[in-house]
Amino acid sequence: MRITRLRLIGLCAVVVGGSLWLAFSSPSAARMGSSSCTAGDAGGTVILCDDFEDDGFQARWDIGGHQDFWPISQFVRCANDDFGFRDRCAAWSNGLVFDREWGFYGYDARRPFPRQSEFYIRWYQYISDPYAWGPLEDKSVMLHDASNTLVAYVGTNRNHRPTIPDSGPGMPFVANYQDVDWPETANRYTRVNRFQNQKRNITLEPGRWYLFEWYVKLNTPGVSDGVTRLWIDDATGPVSVQTMRMEHTDMRWLRNRDAGKAFGVLRLTVYHQRCDGVPNTCPPNGPMTLNQSHRWDRIVISKAAIGPMSAAER
Image (tube, rainbow, N blue to C red; front, side):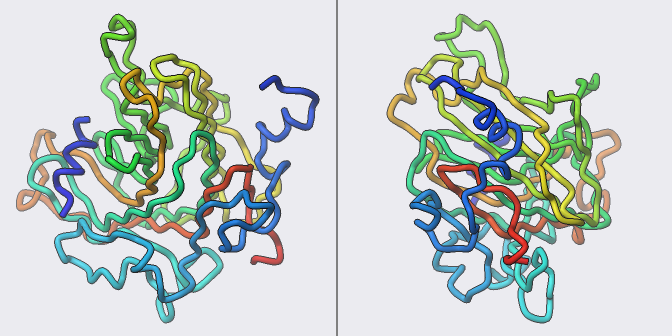
């Protein structure tokens, strides 16, 4: 499969009134209604959803990337596993395997959705216990266009030397691989990685489920006028008001040459990058991360803010 894809990643209106402001500060304030998995519900705002509760997931997802370490059928763990978010099923990535170049990876699953220039993604994500964060970064929920020329993702860990404020092990961030030094910016900046900036930083803890919601608005091609917002909350108990951890309004998701493109592929993966430390602990020189995993459940992509699961859905 997908070593080449992993290498690519490794290389690579006016706001009126308080109600709209509240919608930006908490998606649950403008929630779309039920987040049940019926695309087109809630007035046609939902464009993709998956709670992994049926036997048809293999027809919806392109699954691979684990060197046959685990059967593809186990990308979703159900029944006697009993490990979905308050439910019986969840997608997962486990048994991370060293790719002999960039790092470790497990399951890798992709699903297309109708291309969008402005949208929300809501998901619940579990971090296994124990979990050792990668020495560079851990990728998680990713976006691509149909031709894989656009790359963006929410990662769960980004380490720097020296340390950059608001980043570190277990601290989610947003990566935007188009926002680099290109001739159209006169080499003014490289802004691939964006960090929490609301003075409410969250660090993920192993053994917990978290509620994520990510807002993306594409930019005018070549112009830094796109938007990203990220809400994250510990989902151990009910979440009534979501907490914004990040807001950046100068995103350049699209370069000039990307005019006409848009995100239209959702990807779930754990990529624990890299293996260039001293001493070298990569296999066979050190332990493999066999028992580390992330799990995802209750995924919704929508044109409107989504918010937490309702009490009825629990």
